[in-house]
Length: 254
Image (cartoon, one colour):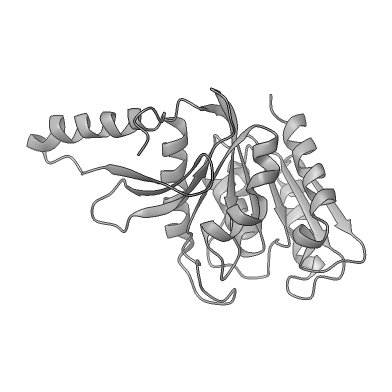
């Protein structure tokens, strides 16, 4: 581990908390980092609650001292943190974002598999805690992007966490029945919804239903249906899609 890495401060703080609180039975918290072969990338394992599984994922940093904006990337069904980092991190690193992703509850599972949305939200809250304690991150400007199953998780997190600056989703939306009830009145982040007109996995109607729900609660959102493309929208139209997402984040950076 690089001893000068900014997250070492969090490790020292958590160590102090454990030592100071041990007599009171305080919960053990631990963050460990492992440098990856790619420049400025680290895998992490974080245990904010010793009674629950560790939160694992990847952090990637742009060159420079910061503090930088940060973006959380939420993977789809069957994917992992590594998947979404490999696909999209470079786009945000070029624009001087710290990029973070964790394995969600649906990691490695079929998109139709039953998962616990509350567990994904717990992991994302833990990831936010890492970011807000990182000297290289401007914790006032944390954004989130999710695709497919990760899009659903992104919207759910926006109803759960008030400090997200803005969000963008592709290939996701709302269905008639969901596994978790979402209180749209609690959303504070503007949301950009991009969807392939020929999406054969998540129908356009799901994106439209999400837009209507946001409108009904007076929330700021944009919906764009992209013609002649399906569920592979963020891959096959990557340059176009992420130009829109980055512009949306810029508009809502505050």
